[in-house]
Image (cartoon, rainbow, N blue to C red):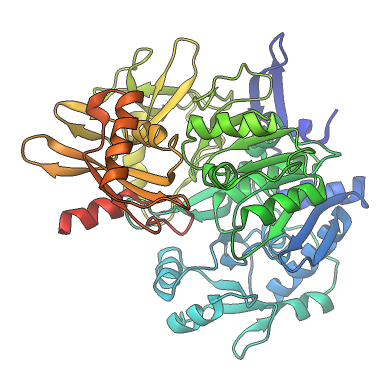
Length: 547
């Protein structure tokens, strides 16, 4: 039996595709003890993480080292008054310390709050007050985090620093190094809070999403049956540790499947440098948001970069089919999509062994009962657009769906209106159960009596060589309701002018219905994005409404 199988029940069809996936957590399950420490005892010298940075520094960690360092970190936190239930925010980039620090917090029963190091003082202040943060751990490694934390200077918050020394901060590296490696187990219930993520805030203030200890187990499905990680391989997911995508691809599911993770610690994204890392370390499975693949394809794929890679997947936003086609043509690798949210794990996916349908996100995973529902609450017919909702089992408990929004019961009740979880994402489903993304519910454009999906238009525009990135929005118009606008970042060598706009219009008209054709074009040097890298169409709409 595989190590992870003690926590789940699985079944497969005759083609080896997963059909059943049921979480069976021990009552007191804790990832720190029951996975990291257990694997350290089972195979202490097995590599769990390979880390490198842009300066070509490198560290390799075994499970035994990760177990020991997390015990030492837990002792330091305990000595500074951090205990079970306390909220601790982590602004640690991709520094390797993040991994044993978060495991230490799990062992203590504290609630870890991963956050990006790019937060400004106001962002930090908002989060500290929203969820009553007791301590903040921040890096001094090419980061403004300490400076911004000092600006807001939250009262009563313990401040820990890695990779540097500053007045008012605990030197966490030094104290971990001198701390005892003996740490007695703190009992936690599997149903108690373990992790808290703030949403990316694409449409409003970020909400604080709470997950319990079973969340880690749900990512077995993510790692094993979607990413297809291997015990003798090396998995690389591209994500800052401040975002939920890091939990999907840089920790829980991978280690539960005994698969080593690759961490590339960089400040400025360079597609060539990333491909060099993939090639140098012989990465076997790779996951990145669609933006990364766009840069690979548009800027050119390094010959041989993906020779060691056996599986590639993508999530975080919708994938343009043209990019997936071109990536496969150059590498031979089929890009398999997945869909989930900060509030969930992998809801919909192109799972291992499942027939590949380009342009779709795949089918609902066995952990979730997903339906597409129309505005009147009825289930959408094949081909009809509906909101992606999750229907809970009869007993009301659902592994893989968040516990609540910390401090905001009203928002939690709203997304559970009618007894189902509303994702606020629209999609269509074909007769075979494959789901194609349409848009967020508030992104749909109503123009001349038609409902237009921004993503559909963006997918066409992305096929044109001039378009590096684009966002399609609606501009109010008295006669049409809304006119369709395309905001575009150009690839090198193109100039945004009337001639290019007319060329792009003709290109759209040749590839999709005329009512979807943009009437307005704006060329910009960069897109407004959330700090997690998602394009903020709402910011474009707000700017246009003021003009």
